[in-house]
Each structure stands twice: as C-alpha cells, then as structure tokens.
Length: 387
Ligand code: HEM
Image 1 (cartoon, rainbow, N blue to C red):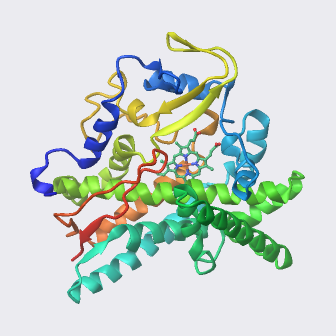
Image 2: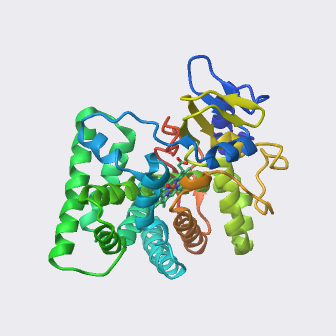
C-alpha cells in the first residue's frame, strides 16, 4: 500500500466498511435475533445514564478468569458498582497525574532516543508498537500501581493474552499468572508496608471497608486490562493518523497548543473501544423507541462519535474542533475511571514524539492489520522510519 496514493486514512476505510453494513437512518434499532443497536449520540447518552440499565451482561463460568472478572466493577450495577469503584475513583488527583505525566514523558523520551541512536547506526526502520507503545503503556500502569517495571514486565503480556484469548490454555495460564502476581504484591506490601502507587491506597481502603482480598485483587487486574492495551492501541491509531497526512503532524510541530484538541479529535474518530454492552432490566424508552425488558444492547460509540446532529462535518478530521463531546470514554456511572490518566499519558507520549523525533515518518509500504476485536481495536504493528 502506498500512503501517498490513498486518499482516505485507512482507519476511516475500516470504519466505513463495517459501518456501511448498518442502516444509519435509525438511531436505535434491533438486529434480527442479535442485540439492539444504539448508534445515535443523544440516544447513547440517555441509555448510558439510565440507572435501570445494567452492565451485568456476562454469565460467569467456573474458570479462574470467570471468577476474577465477575468481581470487576465494570460489570456491576448500583451500590455494588459504587462500593468497588470508590477504591480508585478519586485517586487520579492533579498531583498524581502531574507526576505520572513526567514519568511517562521521560520513559517515552528514553525509548525514542534509543530509536534515534539505532537510526544513526543505520537501523532506521522500527515497529513503534513494540518499541514504544506497549512498553510505555506497561511502565505507566506499573508506576500507577506502584509495581516495579522489572517485576511487572509480564503484566502487559498477560493483559494482551487475556484480551486476545488466542488459546484456552494460554488464556487460563495468563489469568492464573496475573492473579498470582498481584497476590504476591499484596503479601509483600503487608509484610513490608510501603507507600508508592495505588496498591497501598487501595489495600487500606479495602481493609477499612471490610472488602475481601479477591475484590481488591480483581480491581488491580481490572486497571491493568482496562488501561494498558487501550492506551497502547490508541497511541498507534493516533500516530498512524497523524503520519498518514504528515501535514497534521507538522501542524502540531508548529503549534503544540493543538496537541490536546488533536488527541480529542483522534479519540473521536479512532477510538480503540468501539462498543460497550448493556442489558435492559425493564422496558426502556430511548429516543422515540422502546427497548423491551431483558434485551442485550450494543452501544456503538464509534458511530455515535460521527453523529451529524452533534458533530459538524463528522467524518472530517479537525485538529482544532472547538466542541468535542465524543463518547470514547463512555458516559454515566461507568464513565472511564482512567480517562484523565489516559489523556495525560497520550499527551506525554505525543509531546515526546514531537520533541525527539520531528522527522518521524511512516514506512511507505506496509500491511496494516488491526486486531478484529471491537473493544481493543489496535494495530498489530506500525512500522516507522526514525531519524
Ligand atoms: C485511550 C484510552 C482509553 C479508552 C478509549 C478507554 C475507554 C473506556 C470505556 C469506553 C469505558 C466504559 C465501559 C462501559 O461504559 O461499560 C471504560 C471504562 C473503564 N476504564 Fe477506560 N479507557 C482508556 C484508558 C483507561 C485507563 C488508562 C485506565 C486505568 C488505568 C482505564 C480504566 C477503566 C476502568 C477501571 C473502567 C471501568 C469503569 C466503570 O465501570 O465504572 N481506562 N474505559
């Protein structure tokens, strides 16, 4: 594929291919025997804020992962949800975010400087997903939780294996390993209390609220699986979009005040999380449609983000879009608890790229493959030329 000869961003083409199968004229619709779909922005906001609509959409089995994930507050409602979310809900304070921002910027710069050195030695080509996106996202999660990056080197690997579910054997092994890892971390903390990162804070709060260790461990694991791959994937999606049309990248180089609004615009267009699932517990009015009780509902965030009733010229990429109420972090009680961290992380990473590799470009011919999953849409690799 030749980047210069293709008019559209390949991500738009992937989205268009999928979305062209959906009748966009109805904001709420039923798909035969499948789930109901919500693809209108105001309708999605209404449904996601409705406290009678449930996030308990899974039927847990008996495996280790089923047991762990059945304790994720992401899949709980009402007081049960709040009780667990409280463990971390207010932890992303301005001071902690500022510290994380500087750690992430530093970690990204170090990795980019290594790429520059390799480029000077003649090795210009690299896959930025494996050299930068994944390792920096892993560093961010380790630092957030207070886990040493050396000890936590496998966290990212387990998280990817859990979200991709390649084989049952590997999946179950990763579930056991990540659980054992956090169990050891908790034991070590109790033997020698230390104060760095969220783990000690969460452990104290869990103890004060009389929570079981299993709930605390599941919450640590939820932060890893919800926060690691989404950020790494979005970094790749964002960089592809900026480098595909280098004039976008150059606009940011010329005016770094555009970095934050550009990230919002790219989150709107190329979110890694295209869908969230819900279940109605009673007949629910959404817009001018009634969804019956006990129905599965798929909220297509990626399509809501292109609703022309809310976004002027929705398929256009505007770095400086003034109002951008995209739904990439969802809405209502389950609004992404790590949204402020994700923003800080992505901004730190992008600023580091602009500072350290202003001549970065895409390798012109490369197969671009996204993982098929709609909840973690990201590139398998993104080959770039560093100089
Ligand atoms: C670009 C990055 C990210 C995107 C696009 C994203 C997207 C989302 C979305 C769409 C939801 C809502 C799920 C729902 O409504 O059912 C969500 C929830 C959540 N996210 Fe994120 N996320 C990102 C980064 C992070 C990070 C960095 C963390 C933490 C370290 C995190 C932790 C969580 C958690 C724990 C939930 C569950 C919230 C709840 O159910 O109350 N996310 N995220």
